[in-house]
Length: 298
Image 1 (cartoon, rainbow, N blue to C red):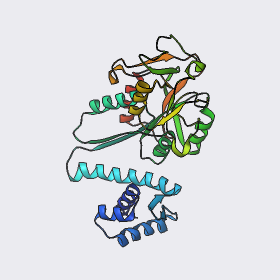
Image 2: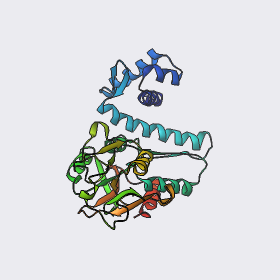
Image 3: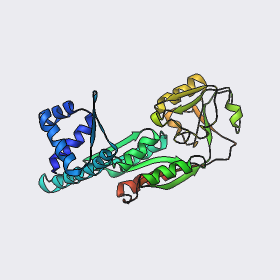
């Protein structure tokens, strides 16, 4: 197995198509297909499944590509430093649930790093995808929360994927509302107070479950429910539809001026927000900088 073959496999996985990958690599389709078959034969696993719309990674293929990325990235670091005499290009990737403070800490990380060459990635995504990204070593760390409700399920999933959870800080549940919402003047709220209003939450795709939800009390039935895929939409629906969401209460005012407020929720639950990492890895220097930046928001 060669470094070039590993690069081929990574490109094929990223494009999801032998045809598109071959174009990007400037090689023929038969050459790429042959390289993939050689690696699959050598490793004794099926890395891709083929279908009419392209290719997809198998479970074993996801794990293989995680290690392949590490090998290629380390080789690129060696080439930069010792062959091209360039400053080492650092790569750091974070997969996270949809929190404003993770983006704020990311800005601080970039400012702190300050070198000429880097590739930093902030991937706001679904809970199960965060676990997949870290397990497959696409992401260095993942940011999510554990509560009394989801702990048994998430801890089991993390153990099955050889991942460990490290708490950064805890937060009591708060309700996010627009400043002129009918409930905005209340000092605290109960779940029953929220029933007349649209409940806003993030889509979890194939893993649409209260255990993988990014919002507390997702197991509570709601007559009106709106699911979205990005933070901007949730903010817009809070402002335009009197919607609400339940989260940590951390929401920097500069994002929407004073349009969004948070009110404590009178329910017994705690969000333990932390990072996940592979059990066989330690937090890198960049990871430590990022986690320290996150701690400032507790």
